[in-house]
Length: 329
Image 1 (cartoon, helix red, strand yellow):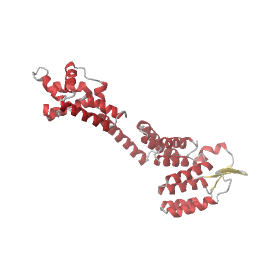
Image 2: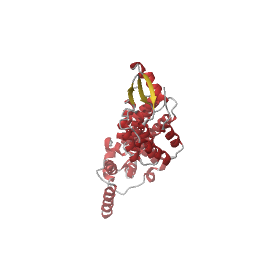
Image 3: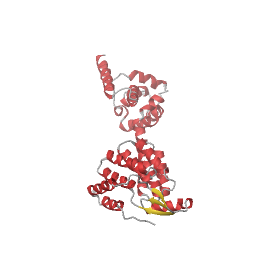
Image 4: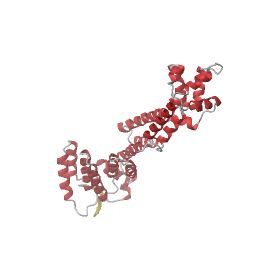
């Protein structure tokens, strides 16, 4: 049995029409009249009176809990916890996120086991750039009510995925979105987020290749005796652009091999272009090693910047000192 002539439905309609001021006035007035001891469920004779937010929630409860209670269930209205949620939605649309969070906290205070309240709290915390706290709320939303409809659990899982992306945990985010699809297979949002994760992984791989390449030279230093000797000789010399030494195409081959495979890649690529049997092999290698990309002091400085041990300004000052020292020699 359901009685649903209440302000929640009117608020839903006004919110759907984006009439924020009207919605806020309606909800504030309704909440001002909330009974002091209002609860979302209570016994009334042979009835168990429960305030459900919608039909899906009502049917989920009946299917999962009816066998535990022989009383007749009466769906009653209105829901003041939903009213706080609706007021939070209005505040969020107006980008008053702190105010919206206060509304949600008020809703949780009177119905602490409602998944939508916890999911909305997670959403707001994420918008406030607090993804770790948001994740905790979404995790709570997924398990706070064992009879929750699939849509509410799926929403919580998608929220977890969003927070996990912001935390850089792409594998966990993918898992959360795939679990949500088990409950709502047709969710376009979950599918789009999985596509985003795939693209983010590709971008991470690209950045790892182009940004962290310099770590290869430190983790796997050169082992060729001639290369080690030549690096020491050219470290403080004026740089020479690599293409001037062996040509643009050949330089691109060597540089790409060095970036992707470190000094081993450098040796293999250089030797395939300039055989060791050539009389000018050492001279060409020495000239090529004056290209800044192969300078080990540069690799060390980049690593120190990455770890926050020096600033970019400090590195430039060091470079300037080296250049002045070279000119004075």
